[in-house]
Image (cartoon, rainbow, N blue to C red):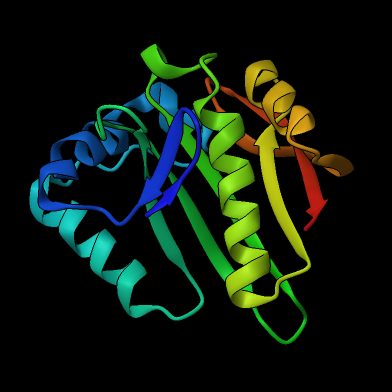
Length: 169
């Protein structure tokens, strides 16, 4: 467990399957994550978690409230390249927990972990250009805009820009 003041990052537990299933079924949240909702039930969530556990270039942490240990979201690391020293990062929080410091602290904890454990030097992420809350959180955590994928993600009958951001760890 990686513990901060308001948040901690920990391995997913069986008790987190309902939380993760709800998040994967939330169409609006998945759209913000540049993904499609995946109605797959508990078995699908377990398969997703197993894929993360078995893939040496990825990992998934549950973001939990540091006081109650209740899951409030997740951080996913993919495409980790320890030779070149970078990874892709994604963060998702349930709506009631946004704006309370969980996201910012989870980003800091994940960055420290990737730097100290894997000697990574950079984290890269993509965010839908209209997701002002996430963009603000990423900027506050030290991420900078490095590019835009124009008309990159399709939803609600239109294409939307995606901002590429990175942080030196």
